[in-house]
Length: 124
Image (cartoon, rainbow, N blue to C red; front, side):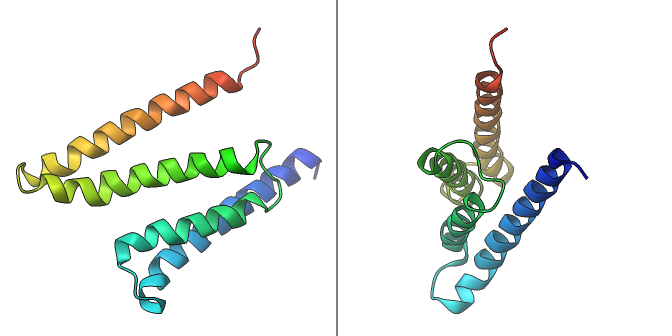
């Protein structure tokens, strides 16, 4: 097994561990601490992100930028999927109340990913 395969395996294990920690905390925190289920997402996943940053292989970018990117995405998911639809349900049908914020988030996220992919490529 060469170094690139070993690095890929470690990255996959790190991603899996992050998902297990984030999902586990999100599910268990409402029972352990008096925190609403939706807000447990905002507590559990950042803890998982902190753990994930320090697992090998570590990201090349600094901790603050790496964490800020994930927190912005997490906040967008939280608002788009859990909070904004509840506010819109009183004035729109349920499919529109969920569909509009989720669509806006997905389009914005796709644009951000495209920008990031273009900024990672080295100039020719």
